Length: 334
Image (tube, rainbow, N blue to C red; front, side, top):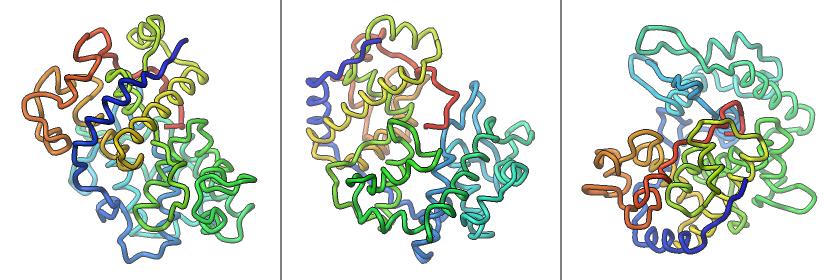
């Protein structure tokens, strides 16, 4: 497997993004999904720590996690965080380590069950994994910290510090945050920075949280190139090994770091844009360049008739690069 970062493409994408105004920076204070601004920082921290720990792969075997919650339809991460905030409003102590340490799988299953369009009760397919991740957080906080908020205070606002005392370093004690590419860890850092819980003193250590959306976009735009065999493997939906996924996403992370530097856009703000772009515009199936701009994509990019990246996009110029998502689904990393 060969993966190469295309610096020229990174620079061109960065230059184009520089002229694009990032609209409506999300402060993650929508009470439909997140705790109110009036809540204590300690409780808000625990909410995000817990919710991000189970925020992974909500589509499995092409079966989406979506359905009705309080008579309104929610999909994917929206459904997950809607369930999260309902639980928080009902009982904030649910997210306390002493309760997580003793949580049972029936409680987790009941919490994460929704009714889909067919009227069937569904929950995430890896419910046992999510239960294990939640329980692990509770046990390890109780064992290693006198107070959960010590995770913030020990870091002193640094993502990386000597002797493993940076925020990203400390999180690695938890199974949920042991992804070598650190997707969940940087997603959590982004949430907490926006909510003024984590004040980051080393912004140069920020990285984008690399998930399937960002990886797919990077390969299509051409800021990361793979060899023909790897590209054919993605087309054939052949499962990647752990190390192949790590190599690919680490390269994507480094490429976006360069894009961030060329554009002057903060990595976390760039992630907001790219995640929304991947979810609503450059989708796995039917990207807007194959169809036409949707209302959602217009709100995100300001496109008119077609995608704003058509001039620089490798996949738009040559459809052989319009690859779908690489197959690495049996994971809790992202």
